[in-house]
Amino acid sequence: MIFEEYESTWEKIRKKEKKLIELINKREELFDKTQPQGTKYDKELVDGKNPKNIIEEYIIQKEYMNEKINQLNTTLDDMYQILKRKREELKLSRNLYDRIYYLNYIEKLNIQKIANMIGYDRTSIWRHLKRIEKITTCNKMQH
Image 1 (cartoon, rainbow, N blue to C red):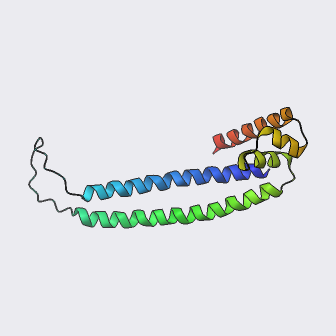
Image 2 (cartoon, rainbow, N blue to C red):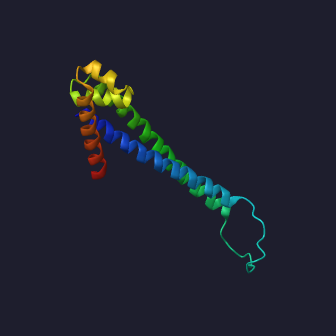
Image 3 (tube, one colour):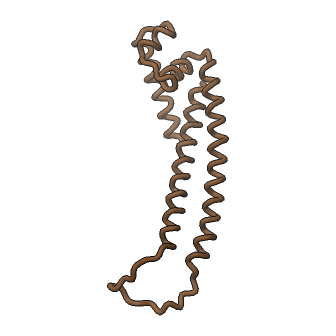
């Protein structure tokens, strides 16, 4: 069924977006480390012969993170194209579950409208939606 492929792709997109947000947050934290800080008098003073250059390190790590962010953005763009195609497949599908999934989760129609469009009663639509939900949650647990 196409709705399973759609859900799987959507789940992958959510994971990639979460990684992207984490990387962006790390890049911001890295920038914050380069900003001037006040002297802390409650700690022991250090001699300042630290060969570590904070700005140089920041630039190197920033470039690395920007590359990773660009790669993730490219991957997400590709995955959104796949998702769009899957949505079109769902829309044109003759499979009952695909049609119910499309009308409920993508078109956001209520149960009565779906029942009228498909020619089933509301109870049957609810039963099919429960099965769809069960299939998608089982697939999420497997990944």
